[in-house]
Image (cartoon, rainbow, N blue to C red):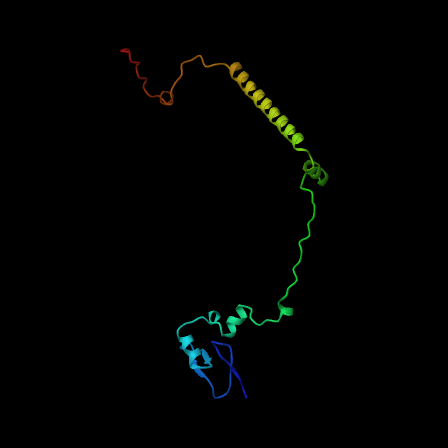
Length: 155
């Protein structure tokens, strides 16, 4: 006695029961009853119909607890150093008091300001020492050979 499986519901079909539908591409579908045949013809999804085997499998109904329980691995935390900084230095920074950290930040800001001022002064000195252009200034058009416009005298 050969038992078939229903293509829609997943239940067993005993001999002399059910229907067979052969699609145009020669794929055969076996149905337990006219109910499953009708639902298949309506393009219903067996995963959304509560009494089918597929629904029960997708929604994990009737699964034994022993097989469904899965061990979860706990993530182990490691304290690692970042490239260029040792773990001791990171820990020392973490354990610093806030006022010490604020003072260090203020000192760094002051140092950066001084550096910027020094760079600005250096640039100013370079500009002053560079020979200034005592000759007449030209626009780009004049430099390319355009005719010089006479300055208006009426104003």
